[in-house]
Length: 313
Ligand code: 13P
Ligand code: SF4
Image 1 (cartoon, helix red, strand yellow):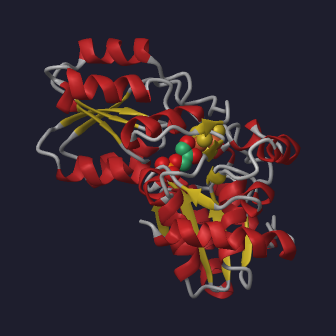
Image 2: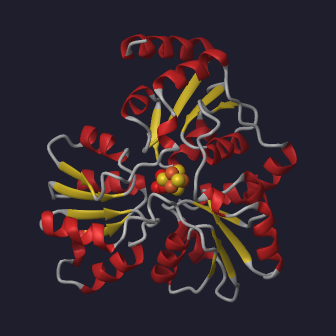
């Protein structure tokens, strides 16, 4: 099947079924191009709540589709490949979480959106990389905080807010590998470039410290994927090194074709995000597969921490 054929069929099916296609910034270029909305975890969750469509085809990973289903339980939420998981979300099971929480009964639980619906249901707040700092700042000073599952994002929040937290030892297998070595190599290669860094990266806290202490530190900025896009669009610079999953470069190049964007590492590819293809998206719409539905009891409990996440933007 050619790309043109698939684009035409997807558009037709979308109209017939009153469906909307939401795609994460890490999706393959052709999926981003046919999507109605492309964004970061927070933007996609907001969009899932706003849409008047009857059906949401979520081109992203499983926890994102679950979150959309919790926000819009009356809509049919589909993911084109059920195997599209997330190593970070899998770094803590519900059993491990319950045991950890029981050891800190009075703590406020702040869960990154990259967690299962079951964990969200037992949390006080959900956050994404774009509002995690703001959410932690609203929690009363005397409260102990359990933050999960990403240790790099957790330590980054601690450094920005000056607030100590108890942090789960989880990581994303793609971002964790983006360390100081990859970073320094690119600095030598592109000394004039600005460096945009996702807080899940292994180097995020050292980059934050360097950004505050080195003479050229103002060239390093830590952002969520959408924050990177917004910043790159407005900045006077014309060269950027991007420290996150490489899929985002497609949108950046489309948004500012006159600027140059380089991935910090060509190897920063999330195989889960790349499981979603145009063919699978077409099949998903055609056969209405695979539905992601969170059991009502879990969804009802998970809605409050998610609502808090959507309120603090
Ligand atoms: P964003 O919230 O920045 O889109 O990140 C999601 C994610 O999975 C990062 O790896
Ligand atoms: Fe999960 Fe990492 Fe892939 Fe993001 S890049 S979806 S955190 S495995």
